[in-house]
Amino acid sequence: MLGISLGLVLLPACERTKDTTGQAIGVAKATRIEAATRPVDAANLLRDRLLAHDGAGFARLAVPAELHARLAAGWKDGRSRWPLDELPLDAKLPGMLASLQAPGADKAWMATFRRQFAGADRDIDQAIRTLAVFGGEYVQNDGDYTQEERAHIAQTIAALSGWGLQAPFAEKARAQHFFTALTAAARRSGIDGKAGPAAFSTLGMEPSLKRLSPFLATLLAQLRQQYGLDIDASLRALKVTLLQQTGDTARLRLQYPLAGREIDAVVPAVRIDGRWYLADFVQRAEASLTAEPAEAGGKKPTPP
Image (cartoon, rainbow, N blue to C red):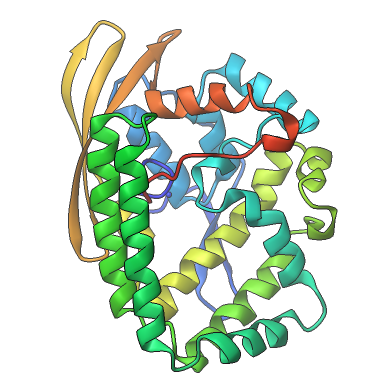
């Protein structure tokens, strides 16, 4: 589940816009954000913000208000980029935006695709298998993960590698649609990719997340349309069950489909000042503030 160890319908408060393919994607309006007063709400409300493509709202719900304020300050001085840390390759985002915003970017990306990937199904499949093995070994051997996190991530690696082996990555027509949509979305974001990470510091956390949300929504739409990976469907199907609550801590069971497989995971939740949060998000957000400015960015991969 993207972002929730992830990213039940789209909220009525969402406007509808279109990417360059004409596909409607949700863009969140400014709206009142509810508080998680029950343990299961800690996951369900974040799920709703992801479906609304509301990165700023997700950040406000995912951590206590006091921590949110410190994270906003951390964005300004470069110490933190949470919740972007929850995304794979988060540190590559500024460079990706700069490349996609360059004049003729879609043609340049297609030229690279033709040289390296067009028709190279076997090479792509081998790369996917290698990444799956490497990712699995990394998670199993890294002491920062709990046993429940390892089990969750192992399931998502298996699901995504299975999808990747079936996805038509080597087809030129699909790649052209993909790059055309992403270059247009990157330019619409208004984020100066050439400025690198400093662009996020200049804008600040909430404006950056608001500008990034439509870009990431287009990325997800293209993964669905061109390659069959429907993250929104996974989020809509999410089932959250309270397994155990002891005072201000709880354990939640998350069940959702991902790329044709059923994911079944257990995650901790914590109550702070009367509101519930997913404990892993709170811990990683706190940890992001301890990084040196040059090191800001997530270390750990998280399940989609």
